[in-house]
Amino acid sequence: MMRMAGVIIAVGAFSVACLARMQLGKAFAFTPQAKGLVTKGLYSRVKHPMYIFVDIAICGVALAAQRWWVLLPLLILVPMQIRNSRKERELLLAKFGDAYVEYDRKTWF
Image (cartoon, rainbow, N blue to C red; front, side, top):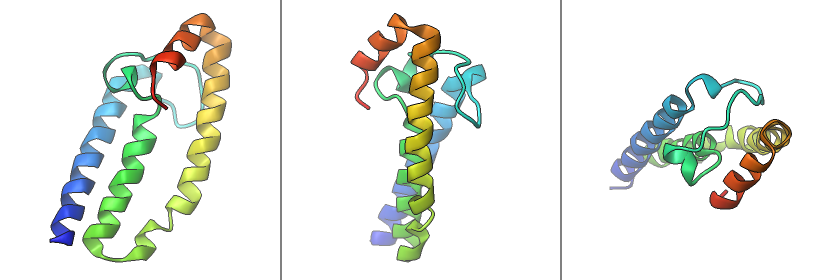
């Protein structure tokens, strides 16, 4: 039962992370950049859906595998995501100003 729940969580979360990547389009970058301000789709409510749903997918894999050590990459990944999200915020604020402030106000996290 727990394994199946883990598979469902992992597949669902990975699917949403892929959707978030598609919605970013040309604004996607591996390093923090201000290529564009995406405010539609998942990004209309959540600033970093790719980060969040990749992390949830890893948790689902750990649950499906029933191995706690599968979570270890999160010890590196989450601090990197936090650092990148802060840098992205600075860059987007500098480039888009009030438009980013309004976006930031409307999104959850």
